[in-house]
Amino acid sequence: LPETEKLKLKHAAEDVHGLKVKLNHTLTQMKAAAKLIIPTDTSKGSKIKGHLTHAIYGEATEPATVTLKGAGSNRETHCGTGGTTAGTSAKLSIAATLTCLCASDSSSGATNKACFKDETGAQAFGTSGAIITVWDTIKQACSIEAATTTTKCAPNLAALHKAITALLYELKGNNGAIGYIGQIKTGSNAGNCDGQDTAGKGACATFTSAANTIEIPEWLKKLKQAAEAQADQATALRAATLGEAQLMALNESLTTLLQLNAKEPGKTEKKPGVAAVEDSKNTEKHAEAEANCNAKDKETECIPPCKWDGEEKDDKKKCTLSEEGKQAAKEGGATTPIGYARHKIMEACLADKTDDKKLFI
Image 1 (cartoon, rainbow, N blue to C red):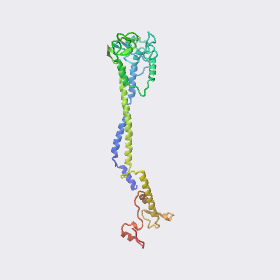
Image 2 (cartoon, rainbow, N blue to C red):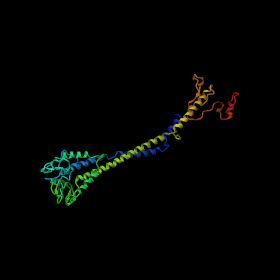
Image 3 (cartoon, one colour):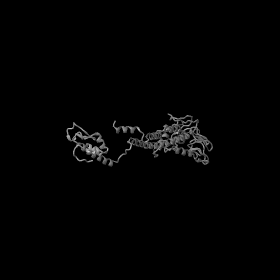
Image 4 (cartoon, rainbow, N blue to C red):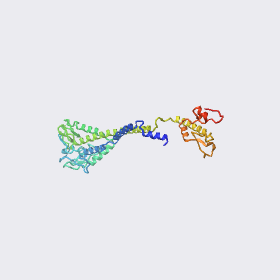
């Protein structure tokens, strides 16, 4: 290999800029940033859905048929009795709670407009495990209501949990009873949630273990868990966004390090204008050196940086600039003087003189 190539190879094998340490540090940071972009726990979204499904239906997966899951043979047992006992079904699922609030009573026909503009059909509460026949109607009406609500992001489950909890502590009836959700007809007290539009009663659900003692329903606990999972997911998404920005910055740093190491020692990049001027000067030096060689018409005078080409047909170009001379001119180096001037000392010059020509050194 030429010396210049050997130097390049040697430089490539050397860690002249402490590159190894810098690369290892940068790659470690990139690895940490990548973990933020792709969290190890990718199930946060499914956790939210799982908690919400359990809150709505009272079981882990959406059932083919939605039922009243509590024991009881009448509406007040399933929905709540006298402000002292929680509804056996209402406390287990949102579906049952909405049925207690929205459904009409089978004995009075479709008359309940507590939830929607149109009456919700009658629901039978006479047996345990009864099918909620009005569920499709309730679900469809809720979808219509949701479509009219303008939002650009997922519902805030934490805010929803807070609002529902506040409802449980809202005073109902003349006696200011708590633990009720839904309509209580004004009267002397807050009574059974049997659906009757009479004093102290109504389409409601109770969540109490004793008078004015709230028993948090299972579905509200699941809603809280869903809200916590949603908060975790939001934190992970923010971390992923930050990690992506960090990764892009580190990638640029890595590129800069590699470019820095690719430069030969002692060399710096030249500005375009400066490089153009220097290239022009080097071209002039090359032409001058070539002309000096071409001026020699004898092989004995064609000495480095020139070389003699006996096969050249053009007599004026038999002496031409050698490859080494071309490289020296390209790099801006000085060319070897011609004639007697090539000698560095007078004695050598006199020894070379064989005619009466004057010496010019």
